[in-house]
Length: 338
Length: 284
Image (tube, rainbow over all chains, first blue to last red; front, side):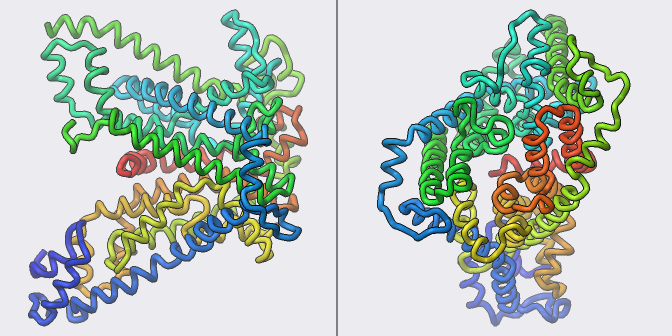
């Protein structure tokens, strides 16, 4: 580009700070090169245009944030201190909902237990499996791109249809899973129709849909320089030491990313609970979001449902913060030279 | 050392290939099982030991499922909702992403970070007040609550799309904008003629994921839609399930019909899609 250094400094490069603006206005009067080619461009005019258009183009998103995010968050907090059923009078009750939730609502504790159990079991299992598959997929063998596609497909399928599909696979009498168990001589299971087996069944279904984390792991594995493996081979390292001392440490950022995404999504399971189990049997799959839904839209307790939703948010927030806190101990960051 | 290592690795390679093959077969089995069930008569489905190949192929299951659901109505509703959502989300989010990455204005980065906080917020928290808002605006039993938020960069996809697009836009050389501005182009022209044509991978990723989310959205239709002639496919399928819970042949045919459009879009755009995820997924 033949732009003047001044223009270049201000328009070019990703790191464009607002300090440049001040500097610019001081130098406004300086003559510029190529002004004959760009008669309409004046530097301050350009900045004015950017500022104007910048706000105009981001305005819908800002309005959306206020109307559908910030406003509802404040309203939800207010609701959570009230008993309100969408129709009747608004009554402020202070901490009553929160106390009731913590002290007497056994179903809340049950749903918190169920959701946490599901989340904290399914995330490590799914990630380990996705990582192992990614390692197997990260080589040039016949049919590899077909394998990748086939293993990714379950995560593309809409969860509403997947729930129906697995409802049939889990069928104790005519389902695929019990048929496979019988083929290898194992006893039949009740799967989602049993209070104890229902969450492990959901976890199995989640492992089947590990395509998202798998792709992230694949990307991470492909970013590892081959020279590291060659150096390890020269030192006589086998596949285990390569996996243990190169692949695994360099994949920790992907583990971290997938774990945080996993927490956020696994605490918000709804479709599967609604379609497959209605929260049962005996509330064995009463996921928190489903319990919020039941309170708000079946029992008409908007206020109490808001209280539950805030409890959900606090749990997700705490777990995410905890993940970030402990990430220093196990996530490898190249820039820090650990 | 070297030759021995490569000889030793031959069995391990065969082993890992066999392992991979096994996993691929196991992962594909559910699809095969469901496909086979969707083409069987009810009596054949309940046969023990189960058969893998239907005889004869009961193609009429699909016709019957389409009539019973009623598929045409729900498909049309889904298409209206999904396409309107998609158009709004891509337009608003790409313009906002352009503004947040390539235009300079006071408070830009602060506002971007504030918008990002909504990613942390569970849907359950904002759902109830949003429902109340639409109730007062008279939006219950209309498509408005499902599509309007996406035109304001929230709702399905929403802020996540803004984030993905901004991160990708930041990787495009700024010299291109500079050159266009030198020629007197307005910012919108830079957006449309410079930035958007160079952003195919991320746009495809945004389109495929937003399509998937909108297509699959069950909670919002459940909360907002009352008349069954307004239902989308997602809620239609769920209601069909509770009404015909023993008609496994029809249920499986219906499920496959709901899956197919998403798979079709995925296969059509697969190459760009994986590239887009890889490019943007890890940059957070």
